[in-house]
Image 1 (cartoon, rainbow, N blue to C red):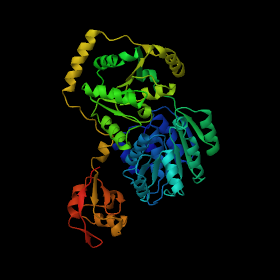
Image 2: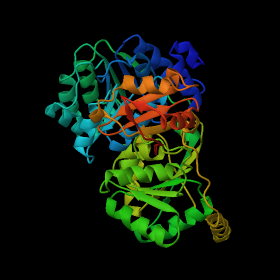
Image 3: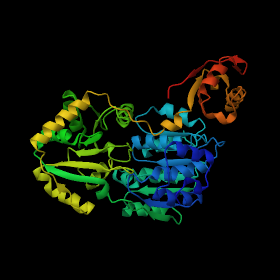
Image 4: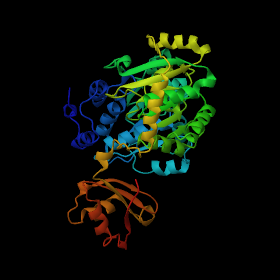
Length: 479
């Protein structure tokens, strides 16, 4: 299967995939999508970067009944950042079909999530703790859940979420499709599958290219006090376009970030002690290419898909062997190659050997850069700093190009319904109901996606229109 058309899915989803730049299905998508469309339970062992989000998002968007206001799919994921990323991916794939998806997670205002869940929501993506909180408070309706996805199951186990996941599963309708995705399959995960899945199909996706072909990884032996000096040398000689630098603790992240920033390096930082919105903003700005370096704890090592990261630097060797694989997996994604560089202190050599045993290969030891190469690289690096960074286009750029989000100053308190908005807008000359995308009706205002480049026409026309006999104000909304 070399074409998404062969899945026999809706033209609206095919259009979204085309505009998102999906060309041919990946191996995991070829195997997963047909099985889910046949309502089969599946267990998928697949490495990061294999395209698994789209593998479950495509069939879920295909099977969702748009007129049904209750959630029909629940996706559980271990981290907030991953929840937001999956929500955006599903929203993009389902954009033209008008699939509405929301993300619920901790450190976000609970009441705003309740308001969102009262809207027409087809897919809910959540972290286990916050999802269970909504279930126990009765603020989420699970009666119509037809699809359950447990994503990054091994990380759920590592983070101690498995009991919460089990509690959630026990609240779901027994007649459903269950999908579990994991990079590794431990005995506990296999027990979970046996307990909650019906005759699941097991899919093991081998990497199309071994990691050694896509990512060149090597290490330096360095004393702790000399790490920053070595980091500068590496930066000058490698001259990375986009690099993630991993530390083991939030204090280490803050210290290294402050030093880099004070010395004029283009950088941001992320760790678990930050406010959630600040974390999301950091990921977005780094993804867009506004900064060259992201200094991070392992919170950024799992599941976050940032395009074109050319280098990963383990400033601190990770505490866990598995973390090494997830960290270096932030580079060399898709068709790209990457480099991973680790700093190893003399007393960590034994643990380095354990990592090598775990990944079943030898990591090459690197020689310190020559002084001449450092000076040449430093000059090139400083020259580049004089130019403004070239921002990357978001992967949804083409998708959103002809979509304009507008808002009107009328909502539930004025008894506005979907049918009122659709009726008013589709009566505008040159506009049809197919030009109206997702509608979000709140208490005092409503947001509407206008498709096919008709946004300006709708805004202009609505200034002369009434809705339920009252004049309305209409403006362009910020995304």
